[in-house]
Image 1 (cartoon, rainbow, N blue to C red):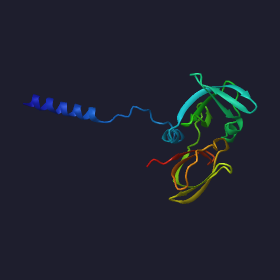
Image 2 (image 1 turned 135 degrees about the horizontal axis):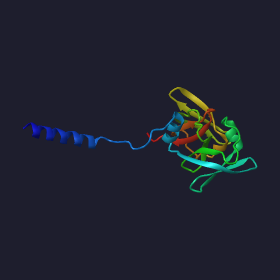
Image 3 (image 1 turned 135 degrees about the vertical axis):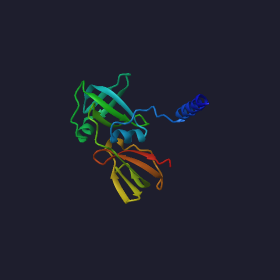
Image 4 (image 1 turned 120 degrees about the vertical axis):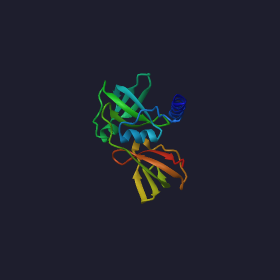
Length: 174
């Protein structure tokens, strides 16, 4: 009888363990990475392969290339990259680089702000949101002014870089 009870108990525990959800993804290493992943961005690593006229090209191991401006890197406080420097890039769903750091130097934590869109002015690099904390007027990073037209009143999630500039905007899917 004891053997039968132990067998049933083991079967129940095994079944319970198999039914528990397992998250096979690795956990983000910092808050900035967590913010990027939450926004649906992908992390790409590569090496600076060319610099011309204030633009540098980062080539990935898969052969893809991304072009960035030196001023964006300097504004992030990383200095101008050099050929052969290893870089970590964050790319949005439009395959546009929205953040870049020297490999191994994580950026400071990015912030996420949610609210209703009151104004989106790409020409003036400005966005205005109505949030639970009141109205917020935010500056859009110059390189990322090509946001899709969103209707006033649309619930949105905005990602801000280390300098508090808007680097990405998404409709809030709540």
